[in-house]
Length: 217
Image (tube, rainbow, N blue to C red; front, side, top):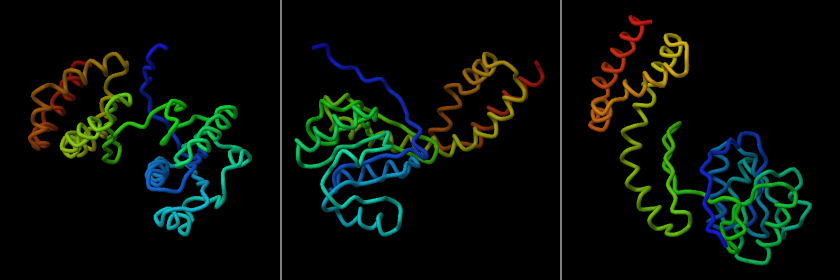
């Protein structure tokens, strides 16, 4: 069989219904991530860890406190299978697929996953993700640790770039011109300043580039 190569993508989950089957620690982490992404989450499990029960009590998720049944997946577009029963996971996965939902296997049989969840580092709008395609999850976690420091440096830089980007959109009419501007403005010198924490100087250089663009337009 040809080796599967994943297609990288980020999903907008706001308002979408997601279902996590299982009530353990792994299920909790998947639920947390889905809630952060704005999904409406339901959990299917006869028993659940305290963290999940707290989310239920807070009204943040719905809990089907029973064994999995096909009818529970009605209206769901995203399913995570995370029980310690491989047969339940398999049945739930095939049921979800038949209904057109995307399936993530957080427990065996892993080969039924439609996608994998990469190791991630998030700082507000900034998101780094890294994956080894399942070949070595420990390496993914190690690389995620190395990305933590980069995220700490780049997240405040991203906040400064947001209003500048709006100015550039007003100054340069074409997308081609804007791409060319950013290739030049985000130079090696500027990015080195960002990594050193000298955001004021980095912003000064970018704003000078904006002024030059205005003069030339």
